[in-house]
Length: 175
Image 1 (cartoon, rainbow, N blue to C red):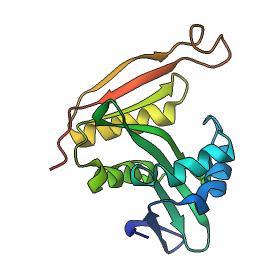
Image 2: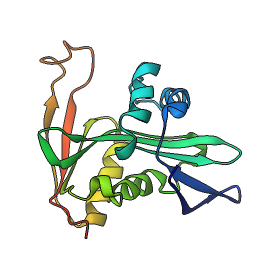
Image 3: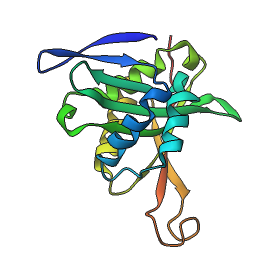
């Protein structure tokens, strides 16, 4: 398993970044459930995120605390230069240290993301934490951030979920 020690220290322990595996699926499910307003998926979906999408996802753990952060993502099949960040979850006890941005930045350094020129995600208008994260990421990458409607509340969700706004950052240079 590939591991990275990051310069984030919590309770004198370093946070370790790893490629997730199916063993992490249940912990991912519990972490996402503890991070409103994130949508929870089935445990099976989280198992697939942690296994099938391990090359474009990242787990952040503390030795004595377990999973404290997770980013799921994938390369869009018909847009091979685009990493879609599906979810970003950070445990309440690990917030305020820039962990989310460091996880996404670390993903971009992987060989599986070497051809990435754009980052996309979807965010509801009320999720101010995600808006702030992706604006900071665009600033860090020196790339423009564009926004449009991805999935409309009425058209796609029949009024049962807020509109998801597509956020697109890029082009970026990873060299």
